[in-house]
Image 1: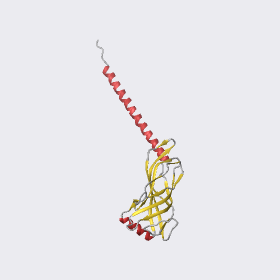
Image 2: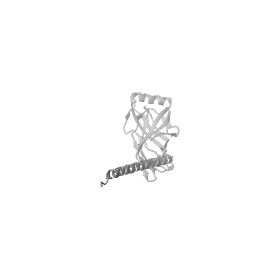
Image 3: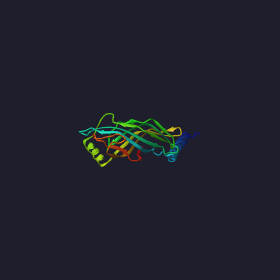
Image 4: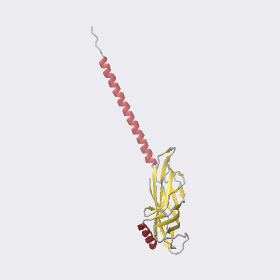
Length: 221
């Protein structure tokens, strides 16, 4: 009597079992990935870091001189007082690198001054008072020299104090990668005739500059 073989049937069963196991593994892996992403999303929504807040508290113009007669070379020394606050309740901020400098109508009139490395815990604040200097004379485009003279005649000069650097976020023991920090602090200066307390002058004259009031800065991270 012939005995029927069942190898084919067993092979089919093994193949089906492998497929079912494969599907279960894939489903478990997808579920794990979705769970991790969901946890990350919840943590981010709860701890979502807010960018630091910057304020320009003061800008003292110690020297601002445009050489006559061409009035295109500028020499300047300023001292800016910039305050920064971390508004987060659970997130710290590392300032790995930050440089401050001054601009007039989009043209840098001082070289970058490196600010001290700083860590701000939750709701902490820091204050920097860097000196901003033109390392050598800054050659202004003719139209900017004319604009500066016109602003002085009008009695108001707008200088932008900028901070450019890199920050990291700290949550518990986790520290993020670096994010580019850009800060712009507009400083409105009034121009008064006569010798001022700062002894600043332009074009060989005797005008001087006085900072108007503290102002919030635009921050981009």
